[in-house]
Image (cartoon, helix red, strand yellow):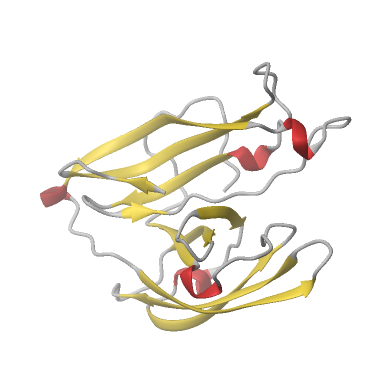
Length: 194
């Protein structure tokens, strides 16, 4: 979870995950480890979930640490960015392949905007019965439906990322809706997955 504790809106926050073993060596260099969150309003929390394949020769038991890096953001005064939150409500999770832990996440999204925004993907956070975060997923979905105006029913794929033993009702989903795909500020050389 990423929380904006400032009085400013965080626009296009670049987040990079680093997955390492005990010695600090990377166990995955997947492109899905870099995400850009289009908008985090003052006081808001946004889930940042992703999945990744391990590099050749690496095993899941070697992945002992995940470090989160915040590489860039543009801070906008809240008065200069008259924006309101897009809300979601979890509906269900369907695991269609128990061995790979793959399936679908259904949720309802309500956007107060009068027209659709640009989809930069959707992230989901999974929790256990104690409320502890136990996993995440990211779907690099595009298209007008994923950030449509009004209230819509949505479904995203979660491939290899739905942990066993989750409290399904505690799942939270975060559409990454942007106002434009054009980059208006200088960005780092690392390109986000979404």
